[in-house]
Image (cartoon, rainbow, N blue to C red; front, side, top):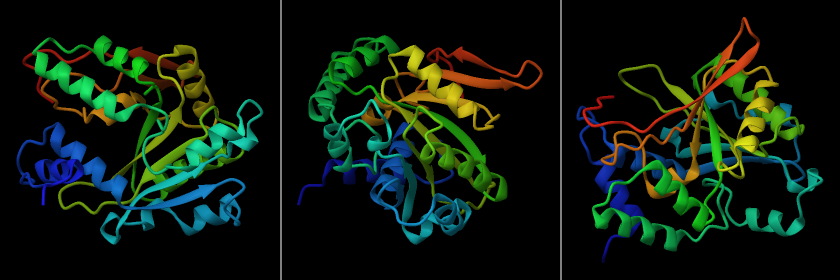
Length: 269
């Protein structure tokens, strides 16, 4: 029986010995493995317990990847937002475990990407963005990396309650389950989504509302197009999947947001 695309991605990435240099295939397989695992979800209007009770029950530091869990999600129902309709809400209900682009032409996108690779032409950030616009794969996310434990649980609770209480532009956030590691401290990534990374004003407003919750750590912004294409760090095209970084200046009490560039030949992580 022929292997599915998902099986091929997992085999190519996760079969790589741990001590070897980890390329983009490893990170793509790791992400897919989490997406296929058990998801824990809180959604306004659907989950009966309060967000405080739910957060106390499902602290990220107590939910383990080794037990089969992948992501912990918090979503604010579109019914809670005045400018959103029921039709879009129904579409999002079909699949809310993965990244947020449910209306994109995924098959067409992958086919166009593979043709671009096969052409041998230089692949730039601008070409990736054109694909995102053409195939309506425009969601993006601010990412916050936190250590496992009390601090990580606390920062996640700030964001989760902000989502539920309507204090953020983002209506969906997720954090990965704890993964035990032999060589370094365990950590999490918190992802906070917005609809259109090509709309810079929207991206900036999303960041501002996240900061309003009291989040002071470094934020990194990644368009979901890179996730859909399997483009992670250490990729052969030298693409940088993170297009903005936000550092909070405590003295000035404001964010310093900078656009990144793609990597160059000779780059070493």
